[in-house]
Amino acid sequence: MSLEKELKNISGLEEQKDRSTKYSKLLNTHLEKKNLDTLKEIISHIANDQIPLIDSRPLMRELVEKVKVLTAEDQLVLGKHLIECTKQRVTAFDESLLKIRRTLSDILEEEEEFEEAAKMLLGIQMQPVEGEKNEEICDIYVKIAQLYLEIGETVEAERFLRRSANLIKNIVKETLLLRYKSCYARILDSNRKFLEASINYYHLSHKARVDEVAIALTYACNCAILAKAGPSRSRMLATLFKDERCGSIKVFHFLEKVYLERILRTKEVEEFASTLKNHQLAKFSDGTNVLTRSVMEHNLLAASKLYKNISIKELGRLLGIKPERAEKIASKMIQQKRLSGSIDQLSGMIEFEKEHSVLAWDRLIENLCTDVNNVVEELTIVDPKLVKGRK
Image 1 (cartoon, rainbow, N blue to C red):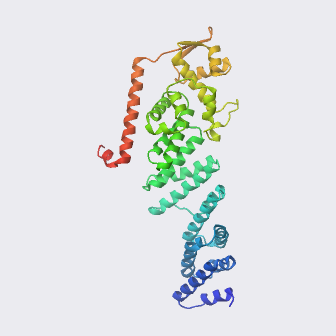
Image 2 (cartoon, rainbow, N blue to C red):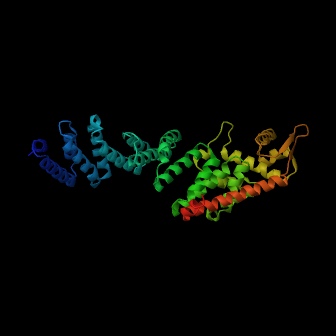
């Protein structure tokens, strides 16, 4: 008997229970045989609007649950056929379509087809509602953001992460919260908001899996080093330098020199550059990149600790740039209050102002507050009740 005739006979049975049993038996038989053409014909039949939903829905759910017995390649072929056949009945099979799209997206991600994996998830009908459904929608938005980040599409990633932001506040699932925070840190990093990215990476390091802690700390250190020189960056560098966990990561020696405000040499900078991502080394219109600018600003601050004053010409030589550019950088940092000093253009000298004792005490107090905050975060991880009891 042909498959077409067999399907017709089953659909003609009067009792729904008999139809369901026969359909299920037929489906499982051909899943075991792994005959794609036959399975595609079964899908086309049950997706037809002439078949009652009381028959087609359970069978479609069963197919989606058992499709993983096939190879990844066959799952893609069959899944795409199912999606095509149900285009006009998306609402009727929304649950099955959600599951099959997630399955196909996972396969595409495994094959590093990140954009196609994201597009597969984009086809899911998502209407926020109360309860567990919101968690699933939030999970999908975060996943789409992660996939776009894999191909450097920061704008698209940020767009979908913003959508999940409206839902994340009600989420309690720790793994989903960590994925959201990881995406947020990576987007800040990609958008060159390095100080904020460093803070977020550092917070993630307290909750990451053991095998991911070193990665999170490395990213936090890299971003702190690349951040614009100033008091906020200094506080973040202090936090990282004093964290015992950072002592074992590759970039710690470079971090130490930056924190201690020592002059950075070309060879050291080149070694550190080899650990950075492409977007962190992207060049500006003037030919410099984030690292180059960060190192110049750092060395200028380091020079302010060593010298009471310095000629603009000598500063240019120290930074490895033209005197005019050295003056421009110093002027900008002074205007932004990231460097204490003044420029005498007539004499061609820069006078550095040493930190007053009151300001020094302010900085020590700020560092102490940062340390206390870190202790509180550690206690939160060990026993959240301890912190809640204090509020």
